[in-house]
Image (tube, rainbow, N blue to C red):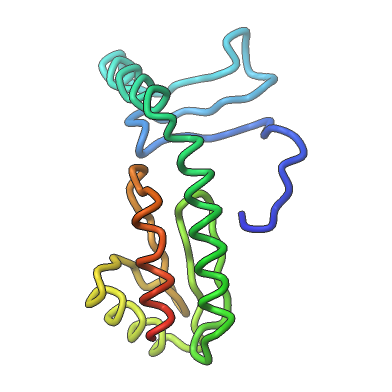
Length: 147
């Protein structure tokens, strides 16, 4: 989360969706320190995905790009009368507006400007692909500056 400190690694992490398997990791769990709740085929799929994540350094990329994106979006939100708050976790960004109507208007505006978002009560949320890179970071904040 934006502004959160990372003094120590998480003790318990649940994973799924993009990894194609579900499960959890815990320091206290077992000798392997993880539990996966899916089939052997899904485990083999995950092995391929994990190799791609490692080879492409996607975790480092998400952290680096996510921080750049979060900072740029926060700066755009501060300059707006219609936007209240922004937060981020990795490259996922959520932006709060002052009303549901503003959230719908923001979604429509951003989509017309090439940014896919979902309305989330009084704001929007975007979950870009893990391949988001430096040249993509300015698209959302630039659009927000024109909203």
